[in-house]
Length: 278
Ligand code: PLP
Picture (cartoon, rainbow, N blue to C red):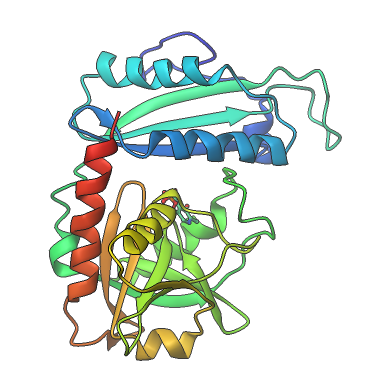
């Protein structure tokens, strides 16, 4: 917390922190497998972009940030899980007008979690479509996650795994992951980047892996109808990697089991991300 290692029971920030009062903060989540960081450089680049978009100063030079991640992993003996980082504008008297003198803050912690042997990779996810009622700059990874949290919680209350968010009849993404479908021709589609969705690091890696293996993949808009007709569907995120979606709004996707292209993309992503882990 702001340069000091603290026990989780006592770690604290100011009640005047603008991250707390205004969600004036950005975050990153990088997966850890075998004690190594997955896709770290891309996460660090996206953090810089998020900070720049909101004119929050970089908390420290890139090399130090990587070193901090490594220290958190080794101090906590983390083998598998994630590193969560939050960079906030900092504390200031509560005012809608941003105080240019607020000193940016940084919080970083680890969380143990099963990443590789996720049972959902075998069973797949059941999801429901819900309206996308988030703010208009979803391309910035801010901590403004209330709607996403409410939507996913609602889905879980109904015995499902996640919510797929829909705007004007088009799918944007899942509550905390990007969505991809495989059409009747075996082509992977994922919505193109825009301010409507997060430029997922795993999404980017999966698209480039598909290109490298001559697996057809396109960035193209996905309507709710196209999702309903899809042969396969899957989500991607730092801690879920690639997970199959087997049911949408009570209807099976394809034959209702994880499809072959989804399974292949998960295997390829695991192989590639472990090879490049640092
Ligand atoms: N979309 C949203 C809204 C997310 O919150 C996340 C991850 O948390 C993603 C997509 C996936 O991004 P990444 O692959 O960088 O984890």
